[in-house]
Image (cartoon, rainbow, N blue to C red):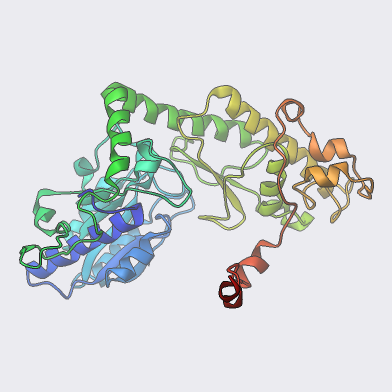
Length: 397
């Protein structure tokens, strides 16, 4: 179905299909959804919206799903087990070597396997979810198939299902009240093909890339992530690695060891702006870490530029940890630095303007100036206010 307008809506549609599949077999009581702690963040929310009860499954220190815990939870909820939601490769940035066994355990206990396709750009052209046991899988076209990323949409999160779930795909909406939808699951979007106009981008991308090109893109995405992991590991330990010491298409670097020096992952994220980078995902899926996903799009010189920036920031962290730089008034705590601050006549910081704004050679040639300095993110999240004009202003106009 192309109806879902986002990956999260695809999850919802897929879970509805699973729920109604069980109901059609006289097993409407199956309402438990097992979700590993390494799964994509939207999974629990989608499960709850679909009327399922979430039961968490533990992961091991290397990031893999704990099979013993999965078996125990599947046994404990055998009668009520509806589904497992699994992200492959996981959000920990590793391929689950036991993915087939994971699917078999769930199927043995009467459940269905929902695979989150958020990380499909590490699979496309290399493997197929149906081959190792997935019953439902959604695609994020903005992550894997080239549609615009961010900005609030439009998005598309189509789902594919195994043959036995086809009757439970979302029905097509109709303005005609006499039309019999003849479906157990109603529409999940107002339009029959979701954000149809955006689909042409993915179609053209797939046609132009071809099977070999799509496979190559996946290989480069994995290669880029491993290149970054190898370069940064001596400076920022990579938290999860596979059995062979490799990662999938993303890696998680651990910054928690510098909390004693007063440095948080947010400080590194803000300092990256001074180097001309928008920071990768921070504190998710593990607090105090940074998840780096370079994708297949970045050339090697850009990967090196990012790694050089991170290694340079590590040197700045060491200066703070060793007492050579002030714990509060330093390059990281004050980052990012705006053009207005640098151009101001008053400069009372214990480091130079050059260190603040031009920490690397490329910043002299192509400088990105942050529009605002450091803000209190937590305060802003907890103290929302409406930016709409008061109603009195509308009356005056």
